Length: 366
Length: 75
Image 1 (spheres, rainbow over the protein chains, first blue to last red):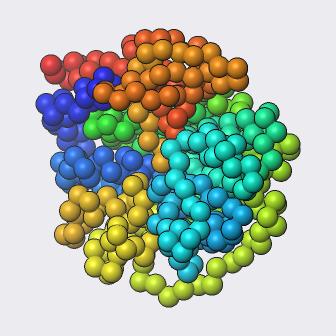
Image 2 (spheres, helix red, strand yellow):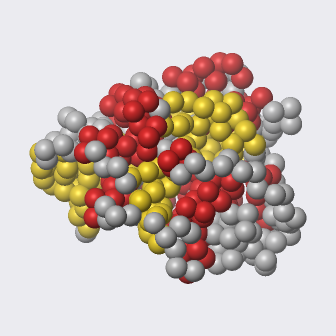
């Protein structure tokens, strides 16, 4: 496929690996923010081919993984109601809530359906006017414009049996939380290319300046990640701290103005909880104005409950903050597998634990 | 979640409310909404995420990694 296959060329990858090795004189710790990037590094074995001095720290860029357990419990409670069709992206169904997951609610007779696009959820609402259709709208900035479009179309068409349970999170505040943590080890970021396709990277220029850390907006194929790593290592070695754009075939500095406008019309920025990390100020989005009536937490008068703390050996929170590797977890690959998981990073297709499991990294991380 | 796949626009339908396209990904063709890339035309490649095109692939910028490789003395 055009614009995919050419970025998987082995010879070119080798050349970039050599260039990275030549450029590296000291140990560096860099974070690839997005879970898709983590998966690419592991799938192609790039993490093992990089110089030993370049350590990858896997970032929190997995929306399924960071959705707070309280919101999953709200989804489970909605899905258990006979008048509700709960509609979700597939990855969400097996993420554990405090007592069970959405798939087990479905097995118990709850009407839980998977969709590929938010407008498919709207279609279900049109087809079932006698039911309340709740779309479990999660995602980073990449997904927010598409989910916002569902609210816009619902408003325009006057669809009154459509609701959204939202858990939308924003990347720059999370990077700020990581960069400003007292125990931070990350020295440079590979920023998520599809988030920046929507938002552009002006905010990342500010972050790079404030924390004096280089940031390179990166694509998702092997050559993208290798080129971006090379650019990042060059900045680190030279003592520079700029925001650069490797993924220029999709990302413009100012982002996608249509997408930003629709997000701004539909959502407002609020403090938001991240599973395993905690509340990060101004890191989430909530339906606002005329669109607030689609907010399921209002329409169903859902309590923002706090899930009881449960005893678990799962170290998902530490993995999401880049402090520990998946293989450091005592349950990895034994009590926790993609089929039966204790933590969200094992079930999501973007989770770091799932990446280690699928690409056979049971051995100790280096 | 943030998966975005490049595909080629093979036809465009101007709907009453949403502008949609048939987009080809290798052997598969899917309906894609073009509201977020209003200037996209047939023949353009777009990055598609949850049924929406998020950007047009810039064909000139697409070669930047190969330009860099050439400066490294590459193929």
